[in-house]
Length: 342
Ligand code: ASP
Image (cartoon, rainbow, N blue to C red; front, side):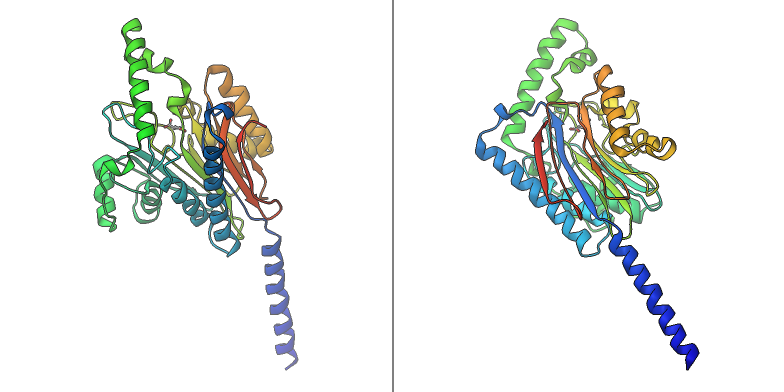
């Protein structure tokens, strides 16, 4: 009897210790809707309000998943799905146009528990590419699937393939026409497509959405979804589906989702580099993010930004452009939504 009582007391103590530990684990989520030449003069007050409302809705939907004890992976996909479904952002509905006037989408996701990852590149008929990236991670033996193969896999998983025209929006079409005109002018001058594209204004190369989160178990996750770069050609793939470049998560350091001129983010392995500085140099996410975005990328013309979360629920969102659509909510801080540099 006495032993039973003792055992009962021990059990109660252990579970209350576990509960206390879980209660102490902060939860946090941050999202972005792209970085670039985003200035107050680009918006009417109503438009700005709509962007802010969508960001708020997405971050709070993701936070709710965490609050209810859900996994950071699900918080990330919940927030990203809302941004993919909104025509305001360059992911899912509202994705930018390729040179050939279609849409090719990229996405990736990473699980900080075990560094499992999934990605899709150049898909044309998937409404929410981040969900397919998660399925690649959880239901295939691969990390990245591309194009038609990725869509065959989607069919096997029961996805309805949709018309590419679902992603159309008039404003993105007008951007394509402008971008093509600029490209033709620059190409006529330099006779070189690559050089002309390099000179294209940076806002044609941005708009991606992403989310990072830490859940009640202390598990980190990161996800990114994009239409890529306006007027992209030749099957161009950006950084967003590249693990380590556009997306990275490891419980021992941090979770990162990037937005910006993808070629630079691939070459400088941006997301993984930030977390490596945290893991190996013991830097804070704020310091590591600042070093990579401002000290490494900015001097060489790599425009963009990142959102970062660490296991303690700290958030950092550095960017070297005029603005970055962003929002965050943690168990210590209320919802914050911002667009411009502050
Ligand atoms: N990084 C994306 C790409 O290069 C674009 C963006 O972030 O807006 O495809």
